Length: 175
Image (cartoon, rainbow, N blue to C red; front, side):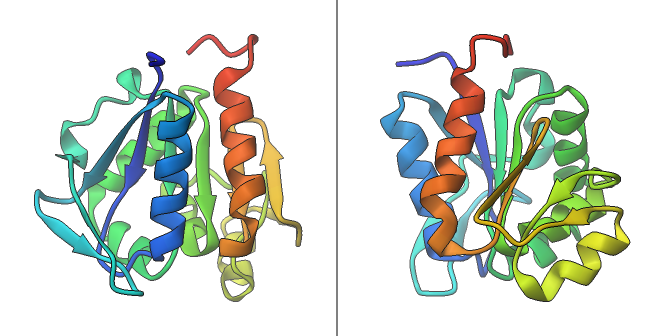
């Protein structure tokens, strides 16, 4: 078991695969995975799967986190209504730790103010939102710019997870 801690944000209407696939892949690598939500309880995905919040976002210290993942679906629009969740994204990013968002997860990146002059991708319908937040949009399965990792949709999950794992296991990254 690794001492690396990965936080996955959780809110209702998450894209089921975009939460569960990274969760399982990070656990397979031996990382500790924690789901953080606005409040305790069960959250429901778009396709009918559910997930239990391990903790509430305001109790997570960015200093104790090694990476943060934002799944898509419609949950990022709900997540960004909670200041503690937006603040956590910004704090993890500002510490130079990997922040990864897939699909509509780019909405959280825009709300956290971390896209300025960063190469990024996401679901095509939020391209304007991401560009208006300062991103340099690219249409590719995964975009990595420093500690920012983004992907477009569930079909990109293998590349997305590989990029997160690569950053977490990089010998130059002493988190």
